[in-house]
Length: 248
Image 1 (cartoon, helix red, strand yellow):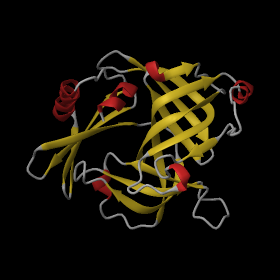
Image 2: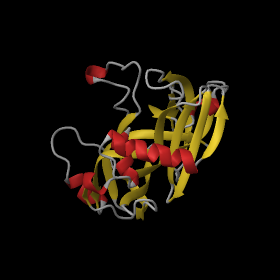
Image 3: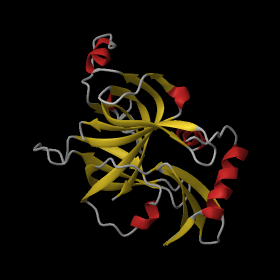
Image 4: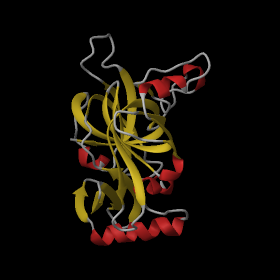
């Protein structure tokens, strides 16, 4: 998880760096009790959330970052994805985006997103339709100032629409389904809003953009070092991402 901390302006390069912010979040955050332990949520500002996990023996067992934004996506949640190989408080949901489409499937395309407060929803009955605030942490990201620039950048036989979504964490090469599926995706979309935000703890900057995709809106955050091109309002972005979501 330390690799995603830089997308929120935390200069984490070692396990010791990561632990420093775990202890800081534990000290200043708000505790939320659950069936299998507790989460401590620290919200230092600029949309940043750090979720520290503590088991029933009061031992810290992990921490996940999230970004709280205004983007919303309607998702038909169909099953749980257990992450107990990480910690008992980790987990994800498998669902379908754009549930209003009239097809034989529950939605337009499937996706998986990790949930920082997964155990809070321990008793949630599935399937169900929920509004999800989805945050995408960029592995790599390209920004284009216009639709024309985005389309002109594509080479080869496969050319993606301006708004596209590929659930790369679900399907391997040849269409084989991964089990368990990962909360990863490649997508592109129009930039509705964007800002270079500052982490109030470290004073380091990171990119944020609210992006319209085929299934709905997604909040994108990125370490400036992984960004190529320019992220501008009414422009287009594309990239590969880890997905973290909270049920609204």
